Image (cartoon, rainbow, N blue to C red):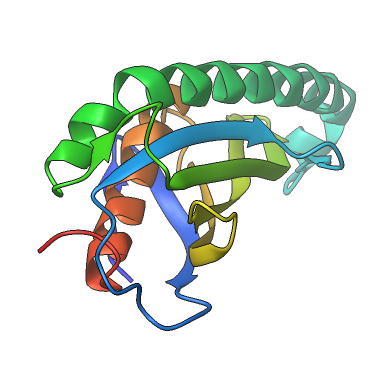
Length: 179
């Protein structure tokens, strides 16, 4: 596992690997797809750890409802756009081309989200799972990760760079991309 911290964003868990033996040739091009799981859930936590927070708990509960929805929408918008705009450039640093016509698909699915708010602010984390699928749809590499804001000043849009760095580094380490 490679630890990456960008602007208060962190990888809270990370697991990657190949479900089968390494492909004869390393992957040089992928078609990238980002989607939401239809059964994903958003957990909302209002944290009150002191008397002042307890007194403000109704306000914190309202805040967590709003922030969870806002953070989810911003995360989906950011990742959808960055898969198109930033992933090709990031992947090229690892010898990987992103192309709509590539036979191998890199599919990443957004799972559950957890948003926790306190009197001081809110943080969100997101579960992601991804696969490299060969032309027949068989998984040749997978990843599961939870990424999120490590503090209340961290920005949701910065999570993509954290994710891309972790995933591309793991693909190379696991021997599915690169030379």
